[in-house]
Length: 90
View 1 (tube, one colour):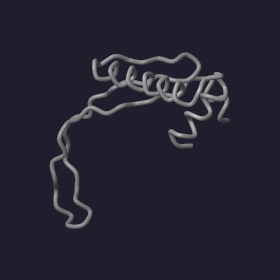
View 2 (spheres, rainbow, N blue to C red):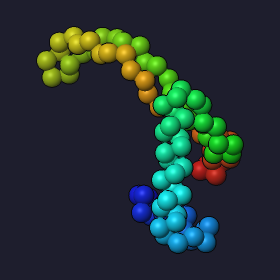
View 3 (spheres, one colour):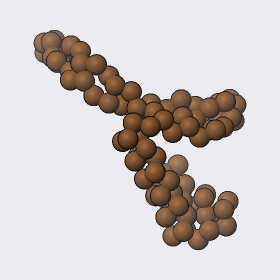
View 4 (tube, one colour):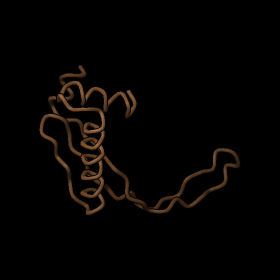
């Protein structure tokens, strides 16, 4: 399912027009991104929780040359599925 399919599904289930559904989806994504940028956890009860974790700097190996490389620290987004989503998928 791509973004267009998701917009169509939202429009159909919520009784919105496709442009309204696209605005709603974009607003939801923007709100999640802004919250994650601010370092907040975003729990969506029954669906899951978005959070940001810090990966420390570490050494890796270039698979082509087998040379050691330094991998810098960075922040990554983590998603943990909630019980409702987990049950629905399984």
